[in-house]
Length: 480
Ligand SMILES: Cc1ncc(COP(=O)(O)O)c(C=O)c1O
Image (cartoon, rainbow, N blue to C red; front, side):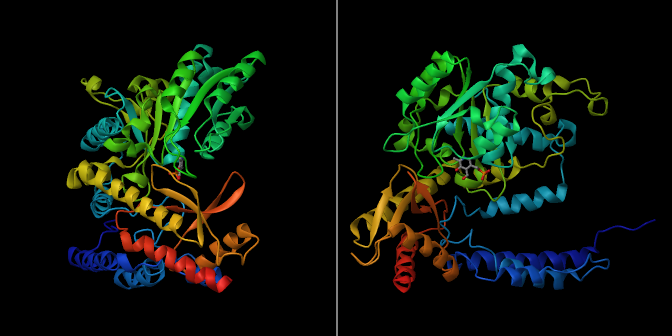
């Protein structure tokens, strides 16, 4: 009967000491980390190929195993040589916060299950609104990341927009089809969300873009007019506050105006670039963000949080409540002062949920938001430096620039030696992964394959981007 999973205090102290040693070692070696640790798939699979362990292992020995199989082989997200996808380097204070959060194991679903954590999450929602210049009355919730934040925004959009049809009860049956609008550069999580919401991805109108990859407003208006003529209900316009491919920021003010004119919901995907709106020098590019009905943000990008955490903001708490609240006897509270208690389960889909906001709260307090802004500025400055090096070279060509920290380019090799530059760059990406020193991936711009460098990492320095080009040249020369 009297058994527990807990270790004796001294044994656990040894485990913590060993863990501390491993963690310090990670940060000590962060600047040396390779982008990718090259191991065969079969090799990695073999390390974990074992039957269900019925008997326990000594935890210190287990930590040694974790060091060799997990830490020493981890993809270099925390180091300066990661440029692939949109990966941030995390931060130390948030790592500590996650550990503390797990220890007290609060369920941030009802106020009395997590009083301080609930108030912290409410505060982080307010701070986030302040960071991006949104209404301070905004309601919001921490979610797993950008995809989920967009899904949440579009769920609220659908439920509030069609409230008069009581779609929560009736479903979408018998409603004339409705349409959503966004640029061709919009992230695929919008397609996923629209499919999940029963709207059908064929009702997304992906509008052509300008030369700078921002949405072409006249084409948007033409498409809306055409859809109205064809019997569709234009329901939502989605603006990008930084696209995933190039960091393009749509004309949010123009989108807000079009949205007001056609009385649609206005949602902004700010997962990649939303937080950079706090930078005074580029704030004007985000004019109109304050007019959104909902904004999706991602803190494991430009708030340098460890995975995973995103945030959905809507204009007020009531909209979340109207979307998500479903009464249940077993969730009723008996306290008298309920009115002061915000119940997150009544404002979001999840019932049990961890206290994700805690790491944001601790890290923003520890570093101060000004310092985080400085890190974003540094990422952007390094990207501009990288763009300059590329532009000035004769063996690279630049394919996109942005006000944010993404640059797309191609390696050309020695002048005149390569006829199929796309093929060369495809091969190069695979060769770079095999080399492992830096980790970088590609995308397509207007159907052309390009290499894409994304610089969201406060540990990158000037020499990091010089090293990136050096490695590409070395690996590229071998390919030639
Ligand atoms: C613009 C944009 N939207 C959405 C997402 C999806 O975010 P997540 O990977 O956190 O789900 C990303 C990810 O890079 C993004 O850049």
